[in-house]
Amino acid sequence: MNYRRIEEMSMNQKSGSEKLWGGRFAGATAASVEAFTASIHYDSRLYKYDIAGSRAHATMLTSHGLLSRDELEAILGGLAAIEAEIGAGTFAFRQELEDIHMNIEKSLVERIGAAGARLHSARSRNDQVALDLRLYLRDECDRLLELLDGVRRAFVVLARKYQGKVMPGYTHMQRAQPVLISHHLLAYYEMFGRDRERLLDCRKRINIMPLGAAALAGTGLPIDRQEVADLLGFAAITANSMDTTGDRDFAIEFVSCCTLIQLHLSRLSEELVIWSTQEFSFVVMDDRFCTGSSIMPQKKNPDIPELIRGKTGRVVGSLMSLCTLVKGLPLTYNRDLQEDKEPVFDAVDTVSASLAITAELLANIALNTGRMEEATRTGFMTATDLADYLVLKNVPFREAHGIVGRVVAFCIEQGCELVDLSMADMVRFSPAIGEDVFEVLTVSGSVNSRISAGGTATQRVEEALDLAEHTMGIKE
Ligand code: ARG
Image 1 (cartoon, rainbow, N blue to C red):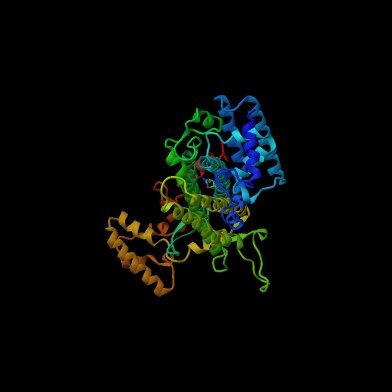
Image 2 (spheres, rainbow, N blue to C red):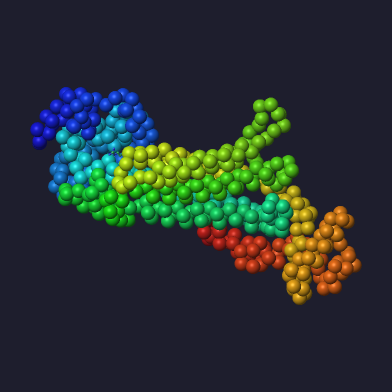
């Protein structure tokens, strides 16, 4: 045992400094500075990852003779006790120890003495915090992927339930062309599918091991970074120690994935809010997912989608915070980077909660298919079909567009819909129109004519639905 080291440690304490970096300081830190620089009130959330990283680091130091077996045992025992205490809420965090890394290390030294003081060999908080954040985000990626799957599955279930039913498709919020409800629902399945791909891709760049970069330049101590990577399940080690300590791309990329998820949730929410108005009445949300008004007894408000839409600002804000945080930073680590955690945590919490509640909400909504079908019957929604019909009768599309425009104007004048016109009315606009036009003007004829790949014809949507059910494991 190195008694000189223990003596030094106690001298350090005698001089009044509790700090692990206190050696070169003569006086104590001002209380205001301790309060201002501390991050323990939020980075304590990383404790499991900090401890997992320390375990792997200590194990590697032992294989290279930098710690004895006994010291490793003591460290692992101490870390386990600390982990249990933090988990149980009985660990006393100290603000003067700034962050999670020093709170744990200091407590370890207090528990096991000199062995604890050797743990930080070949390591700096700069690579340690990068490690913690990468481990944390890797887990959060996996959790978000599961939550995303929950939402995607809910869309597929709904699409199956309403397969074959029609609704108006909108552009500019104006009735445009009739579509299948399941086609509309599966559009969201696609969006959240891309979000999944993005997260998986982002995870690849998160899953790279930073430890061993030390403060910024690497270390002269005989370590094996690959061994730590293997112990922690990383796919590779980072290539440049300076990049490693200054890099937060992976966190920014992660939050931009979160932003797109939240934007998609927000667009969905907007539709649900509109659909639940009396004017639309396309959707009925379960009472358990709505709230009332304190003054208007008749109200049933769609608060969940409204809040999801509202929370989107937080996630976009987190992304902006992180981008602004790194924009002016020279290499390598700068204390500014401590400000990365709160936006990351807030984005994770907001997106997780929004995804979870959306899956639940979708499992409890009922679409008013009668109302949706009724809405396809007005608004001249089969006008494009009439134009396409003329194209098939060899009328150039631009000319056909003009003809149908005049037909629509005539209908507006008459106060009727396209299907209400007689054959005699029709041929006045174009001699190319024959009796077969009426099938084209029906909603189901219109929908089922759109057989282009990715189109809304029942046959195409059935194929898409089939594939989605297989992908989500709903169907064998
Ligand atoms: N709490 C710090 C952070 O989150 C850890 C790294 C501090 N390093 C330093 N040399 N002060 O960024």
